Image (cartoon, rainbow, N blue to C red):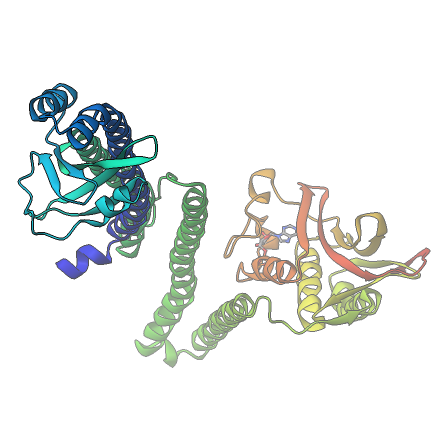
Amino acid sequence: MKQRLFASLAVRLVISHLIVGALSVGLIASIAGHFILETGRREIENIYEDTAFLIGNDLEVPLILYVDEGKVVNEQILALMNHSLTGRGRVGYSIYLADGAVFMGNENLDPAAPIMPEVKIALSGMDGESIRDNLAGEETFFVAVPIKHQDKLYGALRFAVVYDDYLGATYQTLYLLCFTSILLLIGIGVGSWWFSRTISQPIHDLTVVAIRMSNGELQARAMPKGPQELQQFAATFNMMAGYLQTNMEGLRAFVANASHELRTPLTAIRLHVDALAEGAVAEPEVAMRFLGQLQSEIERMNRTVNDLLDLSRIEANRGRIEMEELDLRDILQETRDFWRVRSQQAAIELRLSLPSINPTIFGNEDQLRRVINNLVDNAIKHTPANGWVEISLFSLVQRGVMRIEVRDSGVGIPAEYLARIFERFYRAEVPHDLKTSGSGLGLAIAKSIVEAHNGRIGVSSLVGVGSTFWVELQIRQVPSFDRKTIPIRG
Ligand code: ADP
């Protein structure tokens, strides 16, 4: 549990913010605290330096009277000290004579104790200062000033001020500083928790959506929120999810269609085999007819399975197909030659129209032949006798593409079917006398191949007038051109 808590992004962010916050607040607070404390101490020192100087001056007269004239001045000095020190905090004072003997004071000093350094300095005629612990172990500021008159030294006055007695207000300021720092750290913690949640929450939401999707809920989508990068991530994630959903649904439909396409000939085969087993085999004429039908159903199944395999191979190898520089004129001429006999048998005129010089394209020859053959095959299949089919090549240099068109004067395709004509297993309704036995995969394969070449494929058609299927492929190299038409009577 402990490990999981520290593994969480939000907690890690909060901890790192708190560390940085504590270091900076601590550093600022300690610098400020040090400054405040030093200022407080300096103030005390200044006050008592001045006070010692002033009272030292006031002590000149009584000490002259005592030293030079032998008068008793204790009461006078006591009154002076009481007057000068009333209203201040605890302060120790001692008055020394020029020989270093303690004359008076409120500190009860040991007369046998050695003379303190600051007093020694004062007795040498200068102001002396020292900071050290007093007998009670408290840090104390000692300041001593000489008492002189016309260059004659009469003695010295020393003050002992315990810092802590005077730093109450400074300590309060320091406590306030500590309190503010703690408040600031709590603020950093709360702010950082909120900030971390704006990062960790969208990631958590995305994880939940990913889990839902992996449990089969393909329509689940993430809500773009949080920082810009995470919003972009969520949008991209949704795009990927949409793509996945479409593909999965397409795949399901594809499997359902494929099963259906295979089940139809299988059912027919089973029925014919059952009929043969139940006695039809004994009647040679019926048996021959059934065998013929069996053969055509098996061929149909074979064609469908082969097309399915080809389609999945093309889809799997997208982006990895071998390409070379191709002159489409050669391919179209050979296609025309290949379909010549078939079109003649169907009494269809097969025309070919090519530009004399044409730009080359980059592609896989076998696959492009397959596309063109499929279009020509379809055109011939859907054109009644005495019609025509024209294969044309255009070089649309401005648009950077070569355009192949296969036009026919056939039955045409109703507008409502046009949009779906390139879908797998989709077959438009065709007049009964033209019913063909295709797998419904030819155009899907053609589309897949063209898209693998980064090209486009499309169709326009009018019922009773004919159809035009077109393919556009990107040009690789451009020479000059003129056009010629080679009609071939079927
Ligand atoms: P099939 O193997 O059935 O020919 P395709 O994918 O090649 O499958 O074609 C799909 C459907 O498109 C065909 O069944 C047909 O209805 C229609 N079609 C294709 N080409 C033509 C055309 N030139 N004229 C009329 N209909 C066509």
